[in-house]
Image (cartoon, rainbow, N blue to C red):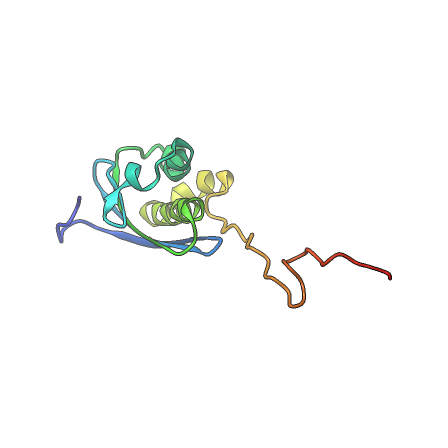
Length: 134
């Protein structure tokens, strides 16, 4: 973990659904820490781990940067998407030339899909109670 004052840190925020990830990126060896826990422990499935590491793979920066992230709200998948968004934004601060490959891969776009709210007088967002004519 990089904690020296001489290290340059890049700070960014990523969002997905209701999840928020605050990301601090340092030059390092590829260690990712999420909420004080190891990355592999926090995101147990391989799919989520690949999702989070995707921005590094896109810019060929695997093993070059350490990440310290704080994720809150939402579920595990939403937090993984938020972390990916935050890492991509932090990498953009490292080098402006990363914009083209990250944008092409869709990592800089905030996914706008949210859960639709439940409406009053209904059992769900779209679901209606059964209609009876008589």
